[in-house]
Length: 216
Image (cartoon, rainbow, N blue to C red):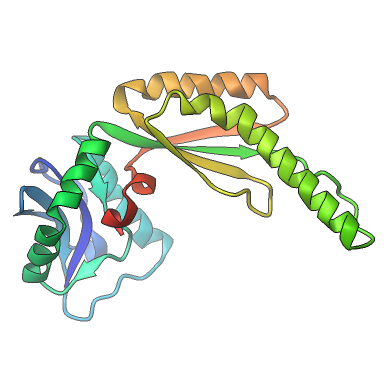
């Protein structure tokens, strides 16, 4: 089995870490790309554990240090090298377009907590429930407009997610590597402007949120 971590445009300089199952990480040149992978026995399936997830991420992060990366989702595998060559060649044009869009860009993740619910009391009937829900959605929208919208101008693209049950708002931004300090400074400025919220920025990460089906 061939476990896939990422595609790169240039040959990786080498790897400081081992991959899943402590297998050595290798690069295979196919269709003008370099397929970063580990080889495993037939029937291998990675365990979905924090250790394995971080092992996958560590390899991708190491690649990100030296250039543009098109990451594969955790658990992406093919049966053998012939299957890898066929799959990559079949989608080579898609991958080239994606690399052009991602060139020298990284993903930054924003998390906004502390968004208050419109009404903490239990609704007495369906009408009150719908009104409270609409009020909470307005609060989410107002926070997103105040905190996330100003960051759009500093990014090549963005992806927003619906607030979760804890009313935490998350978004991802595709940012030029050279603009990362300016983006982080803007986030700190927004935190100062909105002390009632907890605004955090993590990254840079490989641009998982912007690879579409290519990285899945």
